[in-house]
Structures are given as structure tokens and as C-alpha cells.
Image 1 (tube, rainbow, N blue to C red):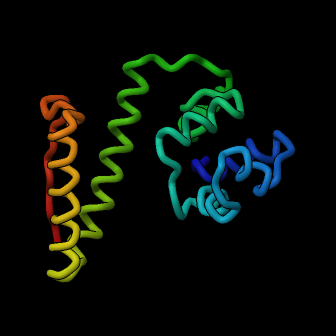
Image 2: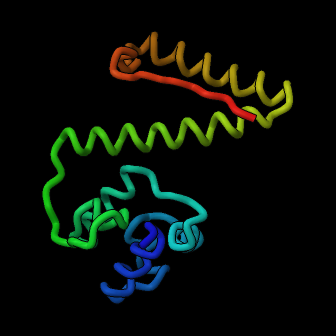
Length: 139
């Protein structure tokens, strides 16, 4: 079962409309619809909130398990899922960036540099040693 199918199943099991779920999650009905049709994937934080709302474990919500019992996620498990989401996001951003013209690339690079500098000044940069990155470009 896909993530979208699982969200829809849980929403209906809990007698919620898309509008009800949207209000509960503080998103639009359209956003809920895109989740349920697998056109967009909720962020890790939203997945965590959905699992809590429906009182199921994350593996069940993601469709990788049929055991819907709520189980506390270990800190390591949460970190792994968060890094997985970062990896998916970065892949999506890299593909979008690759399709931009030079003006768009310059704009993206300017925003990244400005935010990097802001975080450095505010001492809020995350530790680079916590991340490994391998980028592959294929045509």
C-alpha cells in the first residue's frame, strides 16, 4: 500500500473528510489531496504528526508494515527517517536546479549563500560532519 493510500485509509477509518484532516494538520484540502494521490509527500514532521494523530507507527503509515500498533520510535529511527527525508528533498532540489537557466541558478546560489552566511553569523549552522553526501549526475 502506498503512503497516499494509507493516509486516505486512516482518514476514512477516523471518519475525517479531507477538509477535517486539513484543518487538523493546518494545511489546505488540496495539500491533503496531493498526499492521498501520491503527487506530494508530507515532510518528516508532518508524517510524525499524522502518525500521532492516527495513533499508528511510522512504518504502518508509510505502508511498509501492516502492523498498525503505535510504538514509540527510537531516537535513532527518527534520525534515520529525518535524514531519509533530507536525501529525498535534496534529490528533488538538485533535479529542479539542473533544469534552471543561468539566471535561475544565480538566484538560487545567492539565496543559499545569504542563508549560509546568516546561519554562520548566528552560529546556527548544523555540524557538517553529521552529513555525508554523494551526488551522482546521470543523463
